[in-house]
Amino acid sequence: MSTAERVRRINPSPSTAAAQRVRELKSQGLTILDLTVGEPDFDTPDHVKAAAIRAIEAGETKYTPVNGTPQLRAAIAEKLRGRHGLERTDAQITVGGGAKQVIFLALMATLDEGDEVIVPAPYWVSYPDMVRANDGTPVIVDCPEPDGFKLTPQRLSSALTDRTRWVVLNTPGNPTGAAYTTGELRALAQVLLDHPHVRVLTDEIYDEIWYREEDTTSLAAVEPRLADRVFLTNGVSKTYAMTGWRIGYGVGPADLVTAINTLQSQTSSCPSSVSQAAAAAALTGPQDFVQDTVRVYRARRDATVKLINDVPRLNCTAPDGGFYLLVNCRDAIGQFTPTGDRIQDDEDFARYLLDSRQVAVIHGAAYGAPGYFRISFATSTDVLTEACERIATACADLSATPSA
Ligand code: PLP
Image (cartoon, rainbow, N blue to C red; front, top):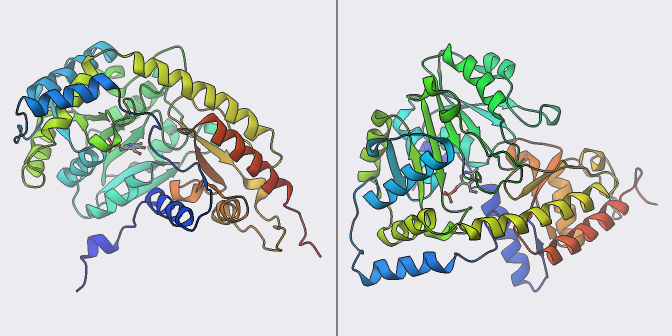
């Protein structure tokens, strides 16, 4: 039995593959320090769980409207109003089984064969494969570290063609934590205003896990003239430690939202009713969970950035948001391990850390960032400290020539 061409074009997510490898090693009795995790290590807040239990007891266990419950859509509209001053109608909002599904359906709703999607690199691993799965062509635009890992107007201009359908902007980003300032978004908007056939997909899933004083900004708010071309996606997974509840949302022009709803009606019918009740409680309830966890993430970020920058051959910049560090390991590439193997690339380096020191990280090439690896600090300070010590030892064990 053969699988369809569209499946053969894509790969399983490298983070899922890394998690699987960690599970295998653990099942062999090894203690692995796992820095691959892409989800908060906190439990969902109690008041959110209580809302879900109430929903079950109240019989909210049936199909909901395809685009989500009115309560959740109202909560999303309120969040956009409060955070960005955006006024969006009910018809411009849709809810799906995670931001991932919403993004997938947005691409499915708009791409025909050969349509191009500009994906700035480093990128979240799923974008290029989601584009390919929907017959599109990802156009990867390298955004190097000196540019803050961010797309510049010049690079955007050079990548745009008549076939461009979307530009993806993930801010704050996975795996870099980089976020666009209002000025940077305005400069990109200036370019986009001249290309009316191009839409922008903003993925703002880490917008609340944020370490700077000034709030994150959103392209939809920065440039109202792009309002009918921006599709803003977000969700509750990261902010409220709700990855398993599978609720994300998309906000954009009504015709696009209607097309997504049509696809959703023929795939899942609607997102989970109980999870939607929980997500509405998360968005409208007390926000101290967010403040408390961001305080913890910030302390871990600061400690881990310092530990990594103390390791010869490694360096990283402190991310503005999210819970990942993208660590530059170029100076370790070309070196020899104590067993005489030459580290050829970041994938070899990640494997070396795992095999020699039982520290699991994800190699940068998976994110379009060769020469780097990603650390998640959604884990305890103890694990982070121990892992950084082991990474330091692994680096100290490298040498410029194979040992005799
Ligand atoms: N967007 C980015 C940048 C992510 O890192 C992730 C999760 O890793 C998602 C979207 C998916 O979020 P959700 O759990 O809402 O599908």
